Length: 456
Ligand SMILES: [Zn+2]
Image (cartoon, rainbow, N blue to C red; front, side, top):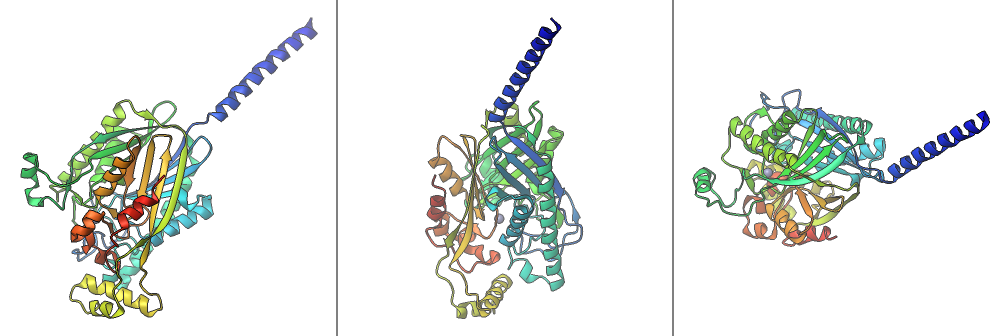
């Protein structure tokens, strides 16, 4: 009997063990999302030149709100990973992104295509490497140039460290998405800034806008909010003073983190190159716009959201985006004598290159990335300051999908006008090229070239 009983119990143990094993393997086959999160403060610790406005004549004087780099690592059910890096910075140059990407590939085996770098376009952050080079780097003393390069190197170290930290804390999560709305963005090409309050009150604001607020919620299996990722298509130019400040996107992130203790909020800038937050110029307005954006996100978080299946498909390419007819060396040499200090700075930069045997390039390696999250969410990452027409056209052409279009991603090398804006001209159509250090305007076909690169 004892013998039989032992056999009986060992059979039960074996059966239960087998069932547990079976459940475990079923669980493995239906693995869900995992995520890792980290953040690091990137507010400069010493006085440094500020980026975004050519009119500033000295370095920052203090800090109104801290600047952050934040990392979200997502891992799908089959173990495919991607790294989202958001930065409270005006932009980032190609060299800094490349340096970060190379180090992530070497240190953590994260391939280039699995990294997306998004900037908020705050105009109260530091100069980043060669971003807006003729506006900033080329026009400051050499000692200041060294400080600018030292900041970029430190930023690389900090970001690489934060990615390592996020990879360490990858754990199971649930992803869901939704979309909200807020109306603070105003088309700045078609509305006079001083008249906006009256024109808005009359319901007569003109020009295309994108008021969508896309939201991705990252929740623990128990339902706690671990991270929230959101975007908005509008310049972060409420403020223009001499204080470090993340502008309205910073206040929006802080407010969401206050509403959801323990969660990390990530902001990415959409196609807001021709959009301004109006009226502007006070800290109170930056806080108010931040609060409004945060509440739009929070409304989405508090309503039923759509589940994102644990599948991640990532693409990244750099396409040769054509410029219009290049200037001759003679024309560049003439520009070097210009009384416009930005035009002269750009020309001197080109002459150094041309005379070193590196002629002006007729194309620019333009970064186009996309992440497909589950069946429904398609998230596109475009470089440069992209005008709103791109997001509106992509959303129109891809009806049925939740299409999110980030601009200011991976490399902010210029404004990216649509065909319409390019033909209309003005600052976004071509005037801003001088500040970015590209030799002329884009070729007329760039809109279609970029959109063709995104054809499924
Ligand atoms: Zn801008």
